Length: 240
Length: 88
Image (cartoon, rainbow over all chains, first blue to last red; front, side, top):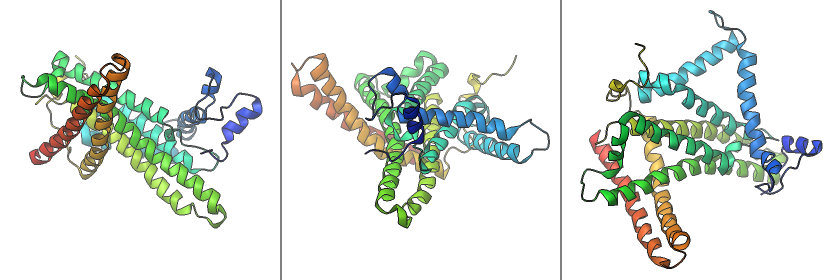
């Protein structure tokens, strides 16, 4: 379904850059101008610029902006520390906090008219999931050395090759399930909003869905980060 | 020496609050997704072996075998979840 109006695409079109009309562009430049790419950059720019503007100089007695960011960051840290323990949370805080902030902004930006959620494209969620997937296996090897393979063989040596295949399948399934859940939820929200807006936008029909959309965006971001943490914790814990 | 985050002694340390409600909600909520995904992945692997690697010579067999593997992997995931519940 065609998204109503995306203002970045309109601007790029006006400048003269080739904005693809299908979901996937043909040339490299068209690929760069796909809506999910441009809006993903918008989210990144937002995350760079807005903290810079609101934070100002760090002070001992925080002002409003600094107060907000301190509350957010310390809340996030406590959330991660609850799952991983304090020492590990210090190490892994940057990546999980980045995932959370990016996902939550990317989910929420689709609620505004003229914007779309980058996370409603499977490419973006799959990229994030591949990062998580590679990271948790890297951590497994980092913490256990070559003995990490014992996570995949099971307790009985006789059926170890069989278990290897099963574990391989369920490991790749993580890749699919994690990306598909985020993508599906956000795409559903976007599509529902677009349909309701076109059907009965004048009667404020999308309003309840907008309220639910805020909830879905937050919950999906939390779930994504929490699952990433659970996978990493699972890779780091000792083999049974 | 600076105490680095990679310190191996902290591997075995139990996290403070690992089984909060949110944690369990997320983990068991994802179970259904993972179950179906492992079936698809299993079948996809078999299909790839059949049609790409062996160029259709073994046609339906690897698909069926790996579909079976996928289903078993899904149930193994449920089994692991079950063990985790009864363990806590």
